Amino acid sequence: MDDSILVPRSRVPYFLKIKDLLKHRAEIDVEIRDNVVKYRSNNMYVARLILIAIARGFDIDRAMILKNDDYSLYILDLKDYFNTENKIRVMKGRLIGRKGSIRETIESITESYISIFNNTVAVIAPSYSYDYVLKAINMILAGSKHSSVLNFLSRAKEMIRLSKLR
Image (cartoon, rainbow, N blue to C red):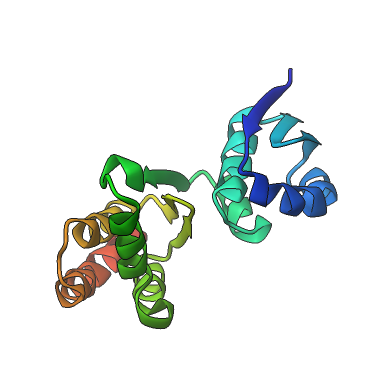
């Protein structure tokens, strides 16, 4: 059975580049026409997650983590939160931080990956830190100071460590 997803036109060249890698590493057969990616796999659910993650800006290596059942993909559409392009641009900047520092800190503490692409924020995170990464992102989107978010993450770090041990 085949299925398909729409991908942003700017990601089509990347899909064309990794077509063979998807076949060999993820066991996903893809066919690309315009900005539609048709695919077939033994595990259609995981294949769809991987392809959506790539469409949202992740590279194939990070998207492949979704083969692990402990990891999930979550996508926030910034248009659902903000109604002007300027506000979306500002929030994307706040999520990234100066030279990527905020995004890198969130990723490091929560052992997750964040992609900010077009008007979306995509997160690949393990189950034990999923709530913490989403809370940190939502705090920033709600206007919390970076220092407040960093304080939250420093407290969450110990909880994440304990969750991993379970």
